[in-house]
Length: 376
Picture 1 (spheres, rainbow, N blue to C red):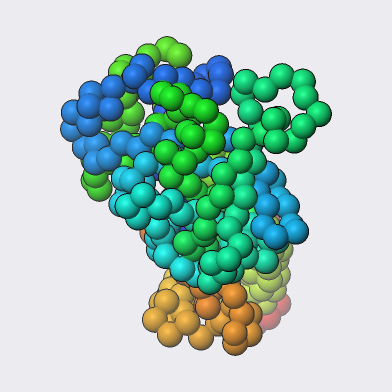
Picture 2: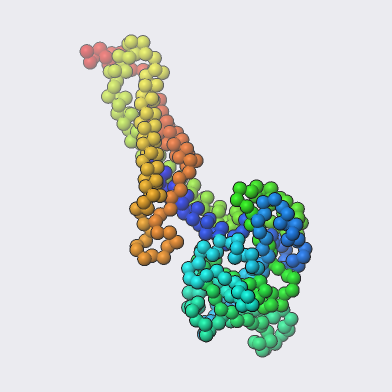
């Protein structure tokens, strides 16, 4: 029961984290293997859109910048994206304040991570104090003048998003035209983000785009974009499984002890069975079956109870995350029951139960029939 509940809650948290990351990360991304930027004419957007299953293609620019608001400064990563970005990314569902808006006619706006906004003490209602963004000037030589060393631009925020701390305290999303002007770019971009249709064969699409992009570029899916995170979550899950399995293994000494006491208590009955012609193998099978029944009933009952608890948590959410008014993304512990977990837990319990039953049964020796005679 404990294994089912803990693994299901861990699955829930894993799915929550993945869904948060997926609201920022595209299905596929194209970046250079070596280098920072490339000409946007090298990879044809139209050619990528012709690949069956591709829904949208967005070109973007990423660069480090200094952002200033009133008397506060902060180093961020600015990400310039075109108009289609707001249509396909999931950031609009992660807004904590304001709206996801990058452009409105000739006006440009910034969508800012909640961590950055918190540090700068930003307000989207402040129309008197815009954000100032500074980046090193590409054509500047050695100079002692700040104005000559940096390009700058001013912009107002349209909203704040919250995904995960690493993103919230790092990114500022800007219109690509604003970033190009700031960085003195013409056709340079940092990469291309691709969204595909639900149910499309992602592996096949990735292979086709790899051929279009060529050897200079790497095409990554969502798992590869956050490979370390996914590996850590998977490792944590199985580490928890092994710890709980160890506890379960220790608990099976109760089974070993109860079977051993039962065998000692039933010595005369064993002798009687042997007098009636039962072989040692038959006697062992009786006690082994009883041990397996204990394990089987315990495993089945625990799995059913664990499933009931998880289902009730999914429906009613009676176990809360934090107190009322907390700022967690979800208010209750998320739960996701997976069939493979139920199967692994059942097989693990049965295997440990078999070992626990086998040990005392293996040590049964042929009972001397005089035991029966003395009792008579």
